[in-house]
Each structure stands twice: as C-alpha cells, then as structure tokens.
Length: 477
Image 1: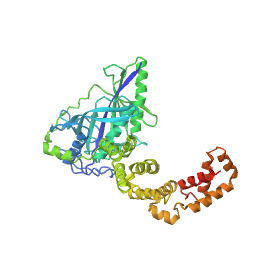
Image 2 (image 1 turned 30 degrees about the horizontal axis):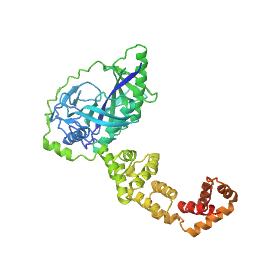
Image 3 (image 1 turned 60 degrees about the horizontal axis):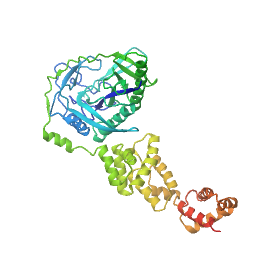
Image 4 (image 1 turned 60 degrees about the vertical axis):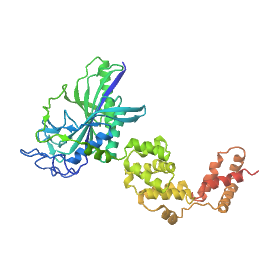
C-alpha cells in the first residue's frame, strides 16, 4: 500500500530581547546556572509579572513576515502542568486568543515549491533546563532560561515529506534572522522543533494516528527522525498493527525514535486567562509602526537580486540565504559593479573557504573592499585568476591587502609580449615531438604547452596572451 505522510511542526523561537518576558532578568546565554533569576521568574508567592513590550513587537514582526492576521485583542492564559524546571507550576502562554492566526510561508525543495499554512503564532515564557548527571541518578536544574520570551509557530498539517519539513524549518530560521528577533541557533536551544507525524493511504482525507517527536536539535535530526518514523509506521500498518498515539524521542546516535510516554487525545492543561495580566490591545498606530520597521524579507530580496542585478535564480537564492551574505554581496557590487563576477567569486571561492574553517561571512578577513580590489586587479591584467585564488586564501587566513601582497611577493602577471614570446619559442624548441603531434591534429597538446609556459613563469604568465602566442607559432606552416 502506498502511504502518504501528514506532518505538522510546532516551532519554538526564543526572542532576542535583553530581558525576560515578564521580569527584568537578563536573557544572556551561557551565564553560570541560576544567576539570571528573580522572584518573578522563580514563581515566588505574591509577585506580579509585567509584560515586555519589545517581546510583543518581535512577535508581531514574525506574524507580519509570515502573512498572519494579527488579532487586535489577545490574551495570556495559564497552562498548568508540573515539571521540575517549571517553578510556577504553570506556563504563561496564549490559548483561545493568540497573537496571530492564518498565515503561510512558501518553501522550495527538489520536488518544487510548496505553500505551508500557519495555524497560529502565540507568545509564552520558556521553562528552565534540566542537566542529567551521567554517572549518578541525579538531575540538576538551571532556571536561567525560565521566563525567556518565546513564540510558538504552529503549522497546519500541510507538510508531506521530511525534506519539506527541513525546508520549512530553515525558512523559519532565515526569517527570524532577517528580522533580527532571534539568532535561530538550534544547538543552543533558541530554535526548537516538535513534529507530529501520521500516515494515511494516499488519496484518503482522514488523518491517521499521530506520533509526536521531540529532542531534535538540528535540521538534519528533524529530517532523519521523520524518515525513520515513516519507515516505522509503514511497517506497522503493513503488518496490520495499530499506531499508538504517543510522544517519542529521537536518538541521534542510532538514528531511531523510541517511546517516551503515551499521549491521550488532548492534555487537560486547565487553561484559564491569567488574572495578573491584562489583555493586549493592538491599535492601528502600533501595528503600522511595526509594519514600517520590517526589513526587506528573503523572498523580496531574492526577487530584487534577479531583477536588479540580472543574477540567475540559483545565485540569488544562495546570496540571500542570510542577511550578512546579502549585505556582503551588495557592498562588493557597489565597489566592483559586475554582479555576476562578484557572485561567482563569493559562491565558488569565498564560501568554500568560510565553510572549511566554519567561519561566517561577517567575520571574514576578506571584506567586500578586499574582494573588489582583488577582482579589479584581475580585470586590469595585473594578476591571473589562479594567482588571485592563492591571494584570496592567504588573506582569508592572515588578512592583508591584495595590492600589497602582489607587490611584496612579486606576483604581477607577465603581460609583456616580447618576454612571453621568448619563453613560448623556447618551450616549442624544447618539445619538438609535441609540436609534431599538435600539427598532426592532436590539439589537446595545447594544454601541455600552456602548462610548460606557466611553470617557466611560476604561474604569472597572462593565460590569454600565452594561448594566442602558442596558436600563432604552432599554426605557422
């Protein structure tokens, strides 16, 4: 039987505010355990939460960027459950009246484009973090994260493949980084994902029984966990067995999921409006201010790169992958206004070096000014492409100026015709058999001659002039 996967994602995004959502404690990552806490985020009796306005604005930005309708009135609710890292005994979240609803984003996969609908975006405060001792049956709790502002982005069950799920998650991270509302770092937990997946016979409308997947801290883990779950559920259904609705954990080391706990149709969280927080009222003035503060978003920037710079779709997709990369490209093009050449050098040469060293473009020693200078030296004929690549590697590692390196190391390209003619003629005299082969029709020998000239000049000969001189002398009867 041919099964179809039905996947929905719940994505939690930590907002990059300086302080927590209901108190003034710092949200800085990496502080010593339990140092960024106060009576409010520790849930002490008698304390009162005060809403962080910046957190609401960040949430509104994400709602607008994902085509959601923002509810002019939204309400915080208490979501009751006990867990050791939730000191209040309840989470402040939103239930019946969330911040925003009915949005969508478009994603691209190898199979083509897909529109994934968003059911809702709501705000809530984060819980703490448990650290389990591997040598003893002991767990420790760090409450620094407690009260960090979150938005939860709940998709509709529109995702059909693990690849689509990974692309959707990457698009969410790209958008929050463009908006500068979160660093979207899955390894540090500022972007977390739970996935709900069920299978059904292809063509059937009814949903199957779903499993919820947790403990996935990378795009690859999300994709691998869903791929495994599809295989597991398919095997059970083909054997005539039932799928149990449950929560499962992904074991990244083994590439499998295993049962964590059973899950009923719905938890009774005993939601009710938080009596300490008044409803949020969003008027047109506030909404317009947030709209006006939105930057150019990834899809808009990609389309502009195609229309304004004449780039292929693929180039534009790569270069708008991050804000820093897009800004780097535009800064370089301002200094060296040949977009396609700049694009090629960034994508083929520079990104290769950056990925190899696990750096980012913003911290690269090869600044837009350096790249523009390097490309200008190539265009003037001062250096060859081959020499330029070596200079790029040196600057990436040690820094410096292309012109200074060329002068210091004597790397200027040899473009003097008389000097090159003498070298070419000597190479032909030293290799009479290869000359005969060329004149007998074996044109591939040309590469041998070019290589010999380059060796004689330590790679500094002007390749175009070398080829022209060789053809002129070899084609003489």
